[in-house]
Length: 298
Image (tube, rainbow, N blue to C red; front, side, top):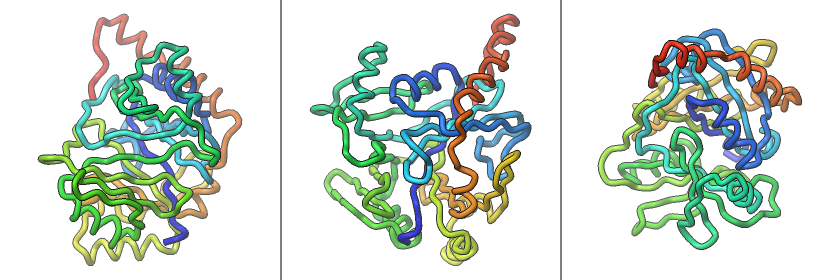
């Protein structure tokens, strides 16, 4: 499993302007690439929508060695109802804390030197007021689970993740594929995990030859496969192969062939300009305001 990598978390966003401001100006991330699509994704990357959408990858550095965010925007949809499934992303960046204070972006100190803030749409981020010598400030993604033991069996025994920490009392565990990668934290909650409409997706890569075996394993174990092995095209870029799975709580998991993904995910120096141009060309907010109508909810 040494060849597997944690890649990104997919967020659905309703307001690209405010979202871009948060990731670029508050967190201090860069736009790594921006892509526009005329129709919905074959693997439902943009959710269960079949219209025009865009994908913006943002992070602290290249996707080859940084865990990043994938921001998917469906034209005409202004917001998404949040569930209790996504519990936050934790990153270490005193610069982000200082940016937030300077821009008067709301911060709440929840532990010594740890500040909770929200991205537009209500997604929680935890900013540690320190800077790390390592290259990637993104430390962990926290997801809610209804039965920690059942989830550990899935993520460790079936998906091959290593357990770094486990706290029975607090019903939490920290998992990962490598010491230098972003970790996955599973946090037990009472009751069911509700994904609502804003549900995200976590992505990992593995050698392409492992994808059919992974799909076969999930079939044998009677686990949910949301999208069997499929090729996804991006205009003018590399075609990648993916399998989309769901864990026992329905968290969506994408595994993508690593070789082609490294090609696809090369940083585009024009990424930020492409996003700005797309936002300037998107007149949907003006249209809805002029017709005195609200944008649809996801």
